[in-house]
Length: 598
Image (tube, rainbow, N blue to C red; front, side, top):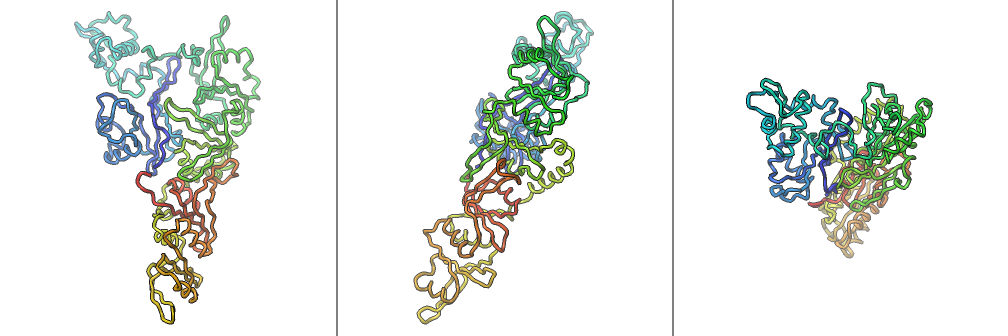
């Protein structure tokens, strides 16, 4: 069974905000199921929930094919043994949509953050979810709010509705003073169902309209002013942020209060900031721009508010590799490693990269390892099938071209071709190149091995041979090698002097008995056919030196013969994505039949 690398999942709705503006977003989880990425909504079961009530409201798959939806749900939620008995507090994944490969940013990492709305003027977002009302005689605001928001006076939703009412009705000075004929906007209860609703309020229930003054990371930002100024930062800063799975802040001005003097204003278009998942901020500056230096006094002001900030100077014409080298050099060396190893049902996997470090996500989730490696060209990238496979084991592969210009300009056409090629490979059926057999049955192993190798193998063939002066008839299994030679495969039906008599006729015979294990059977066949093979072969995932490569050592035999280029006879089950990788290399795969539950 494919290992799930997140067992407890928390929904995360976040707001990145500033004075008068906010980005409201929600994080989803991507799960791999039967060859497709599935966008999933992490959900905590609430009191009063029942399974079909939840499911019927959720997503494209449920609406189009509910039986298929239930099958997917069961596979990605193995901890839910009975879907009719879900309990409050249980964490489940609700499959929403089948995704095309790389259709969403961060899809290969298993976490996708989707912005719902960017708020530049909050009232303009709230008003469409409100009802226009003309005040009638005898009406008062508390009753209008309670009725429109479907809540009771004094409750938390009621207090939130009051805050929203004030926001979209700035002309109402006092809640106790409204007049007949006055036009009001009453917040509608549908607002509470918006996925970004909760992120509009801080811990005290106030609407977020400026940076949180109690947060040490943002207490300095008494104002953040968006600007129309062009982003002058090199565009490979965005590439670095993408590689690090980080956020790039490169527009607007942050204002840092300075006691007794003018505030220091940091122009993000001149000094972009990359914010990592662990909240470390990396302030970037171009070393060749004399007018863009930050003096020591201003630098100290920034550090007094941003505790975990690194200042990185990057040459104006630096390549992507040089730029990210500078960024990585600012971080603690002990955080990095260059190798990760694990075993998967007997398959030994070793991942090497230039920089490997743990990448935290959300509370309650296991951290992933980000493996970053520069490559010379597109052909050196790790194949998509191996990227997906490693993603299932919490390892996110980030390969990038060393030269930024080449990466994003010179190879656009080549990248498109490579993308089309990868898509074709990912959708190609495996049935012709991958065979699963029952290794406990010697006859099945021999039959599948010989036929896959391209030999003519016939079972229960009548043969005659002289024995003690007479011609004896018997049934055996015949292999035609194609070079004029024939071999018999005997499973204990012929014994004693009869074997010597057969050999005298010029026929070779391979004897397989019940005491032989699968390895014995395979070696006897290969040795008799004089096939060249490598025991427990190691495969490099990418076409680049092994110092920064992924290697997979698979128990079994890599066979080369005259009939076929290469065949891997694996003696342990092989993950579907690894099979895809091998078949893309022109290798036919024979592996043990997987039993239910594996």
